[in-house]
Length: 168
Image 1 (spheres, one colour):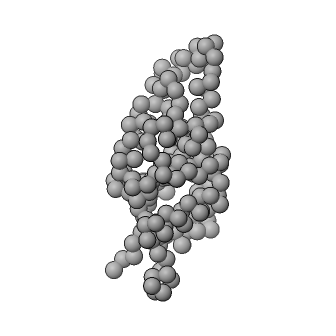
Image 2 (cartoon, rainbow, N blue to C red):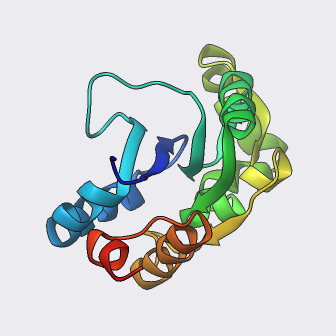
């Protein structure tokens, strides 16, 4: 019988994608361990064939800046049992949401860009739109907090390393 894996998706919205880069760097150290523990359902930076289907956990980086992003976030939340906000933009909206603080003159300066790219009036952090179960702060994400969160989720979903399965 194949060992059970944590079905995950890694999604990136409006941000600099620094946490995605940090995750890739973590894979240098954890690849062989994670290969037996994680089933990547969606991770554009890792694979060509991605699906948004039933997931145990969706890791989401970035703020929401358009109706299109909001719609995709709602779809992801519906398919994921747990949702983890990754990095500052996802957790608190900043720095992506700085334009929410613009005065009238500054807003007029960027109005054409907002219209051209169909951006929403306001930039939103994830929990303004959906339930967030876990948060990993930082810009880029705090690596220790991410590893603790991943370990917690592996335990919560009863995903065991091969060595742990033999001991059980």
